[in-house]
Amino acid sequence: MDKQTANTDQTLVLLPALKSTPSTMSASTSATATTSAAASPVCIVCIGMAGSGKTTFMQRLASHLHTHPDPTSATPASSNPPPPPPYILNLDPAVHHVPFTANIDIRDSVNYKEVMKQFNLGPNGGILTSLNLFSTKIDQVIALLEKRTAAPAPVPPPEQSTVEFMTGKGKAAPPAQQQPVKHILVDTPGQIEVFVWSASGEILLSSFASTFPTVIAYVIDTPRTTSTSTFMSNMLYACSILYKTKLPMILVFNKTDAQSADFAKEWMTDFEAFQAALQAEEDGGSFGGEGAVGGSGYMGSLLNSMSLVLDEFYKHLSVVGVSAMTGDGMDEFFKSVEQKKAEFERDYQPELERRRKQREVDKVANRQKELDKLMRDMKVGGTSKKQKGGPLKEDAETVSDVEDGEGGMDIDEDSSDDDGGAGAGSGLETRYQDALRDSRGGEGGPSGDDFSFARYMHKANLG
Ligand SMILES: Nc1nc2c(ncn2[C@@H]2O[C@H](COP(=O)(O)OP(=O)(O)OP(=O)(O)O)[C@@H](O)[C@H]2O)c(=O)[nH]1
Figure 1 (cartoon, rainbow, N blue to C red):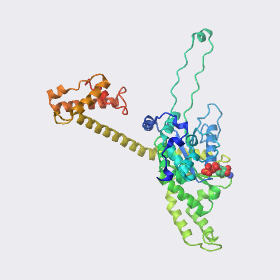
Figure 2 (cartoon, rainbow, N blue to C red):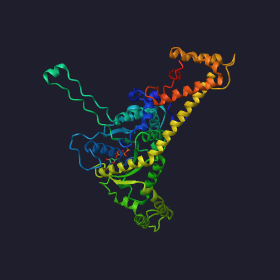
Figure 3 (cartoon, rainbow, N blue to C red):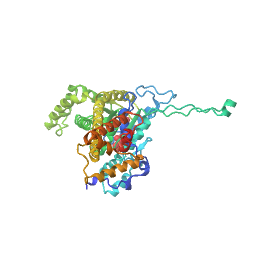
Figure 4 (cartoon, protein in one colour):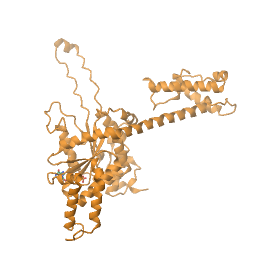
């Protein structure tokens, strides 16, 4: 077995936090598409190389959202009503200290050190396996998120007691309602490839994206990206993440307090500026030894061509310069988030919706297949009459099971005899299918999940 993907005995390493949570996935994920696009919150997933400042940036995002009712405005909250707090997820199992309070922390569910010990893994394998284990609980996480992002049900005013009525005092104030979350912030491990290229990373990201508009914030260490070659490496990395995740992306040039991001913005919009910088570096021998004019040759021309190729890629990105340390550029970042959210709803949502509908169609087709199978088993859907000594005993047992459940249904062997096998069979099948259709549309019908033959027979007035 591949050591890195070992995820067998989960109970050994999963801590109780998520184990005790009831499994509510099937209901929650099916509700996914019903989330109103306009009122939907946005999920911001922070991805970046180790040390780029993701965690500090997350902390800054959280504090900005706590103090700004409109995060796209630089004006802080006047305190009443307070802005809805963000919901924070930490998906880095190896981080020692998280400087913010995470609502869901992978470390509460998976013991990274224990994973490494039990599966005899190194640090990256440990992170990967921890993510694998955590991804098995994503249904519960999404259910929690859906609960926290849903608009609260209206609370009826409390009834006045007789004493309160007589004395005219003591009417309890209605309980303060929790505001629905508008921003979900996700911190990821600095080992980008472990998150972006692993199956679990894909599961986690697609679960978020199929539930909420999801945006990638690719955090870049600006002071370490000032040379054309490191800049290009970073852009290619961002490009690969964009294609892998297929989600809208914001390039966040962090640490602008130490190095302005203007050079990067210029390189991305003005090809000639990048060429000039490249030429200057080549002339300085950056690519081919001390003072070597023209450098080693291929590096310069490769970078040159790459910048032309990436021109198209740059057009699809939002670029912002921020300082997670000072809070500079946060309003600009949230404006970009709103733009990317709109882009998600316009370009990505229809595709997700199409896939959801396809799943629904497949589900109905499967159900129909099951129904046909059932009818064949009962010999009511086919053209053949019951054969003595055939599978009748088996059929009878099936019917008897149904009867047990529904308090005595008389499966109409008589009518089958009266009407002729095929006619009776198709009649029964039609009624059965009608009932199935009714129940899908009707309020009182059983859900698709608790599909039960007995109920439908009962609904079709066969009992
Ligand atoms: N000057 C400056 N330093 C920053 C800024 N943001 C983060 N840092 C510093 O960069 C270093 C790394 O920051 P982290 O937030 O831990 O980076 P990270 O990407 O989460 O790192 P990993 O957890 O290893 O993936 C720390 O020393 C931070 O203080 C910033 O805006 N300006």
